[in-house]
Amino acid sequence: MAAESQTPQVDQVQRSPVNFDAKLSLISEQWSPRVVAEMNDYQFKIVRIEGDFVWHRHDDTDEAFLVLDGTLRIDMRDRSVLVRAGELFVVSKGVEHKPFAQEEVKLLLIEPRGVLNTGNTESERTAPNDVWI
Ligand code: NI
Image (cartoon, rainbow, N blue to C red; front, top):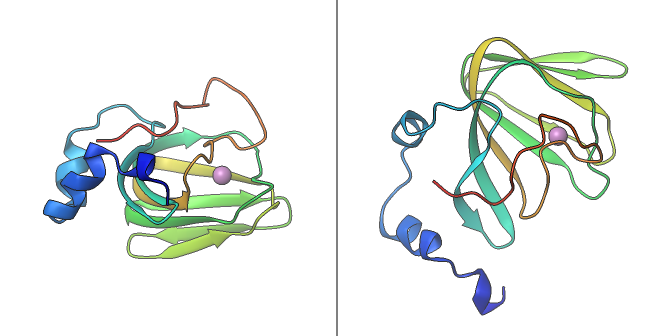
């Protein structure tokens, strides 16, 4: 990648392992993904969510959800899946989806840098992108 992608945060990540619990303890806000690491042009983002999200899709990329704590439901137009702690689910590019958490879920998102959380839609759930913690 270009030199400008070598942010100070990346240097910090390279110096020490990322501890998800420690990083999550720094976040109280829900629905606000925080970048904890990058690999090539992909970002690893932790987020706390609770309640309902908005229907959206990502036209240019798949999106991976790795659940760290709680049980995440991902609604798609033709089915829903439950993703439990320790499980991973990948939503394919272009597939409409809507995450839902009955109780708070902590998860790791893996997706290319620049992907907006609400994909093709804009709403009160749209979060600032590329915010590191
Ligand atoms: Ni999405």
